[in-house]
Image 1 (cartoon, rainbow, N blue to C red):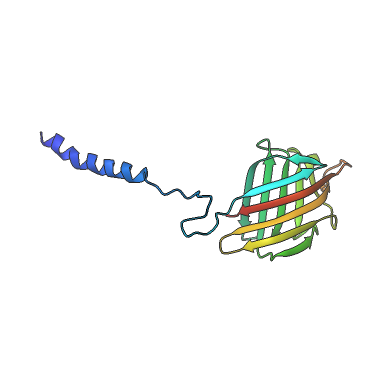
Image 2: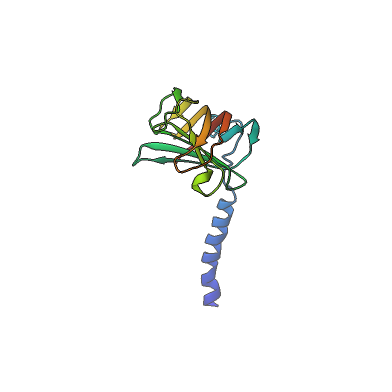
Length: 169
């Protein structure tokens, strides 16, 4: 009898925990967050040689050691992939892809012959908004991706109508 009686407090705590966990506030309110601020929605889109790039995986990371933000969008859960590299303190404005601090990548597979990079001076990255406190950045881009060093191909890809809005970690 004592054993059964001692299990009641444990069952009560479990019941309360289950009840409170099922009463979680919905933080995906399309009208805004609980403070009334608009909810930030991540997005990524582009065209490759005029065809729509259908992103299925979107990642954005800040690498503090190299002071970079890297945005990567993959189609078909792996390749092709579009990547953007920029300084983590980049301010709103329009920048030319320069092969070092502002770079675009297009990767069609797993070998060096599958890697293409923004040709220097062939496109622009426009940052429309960058909040370093909330780690949210938005912008547009376009560039010509030519064979990266080590890629023996001669073809190129036109990356156009690119846009992004991401939270980075």
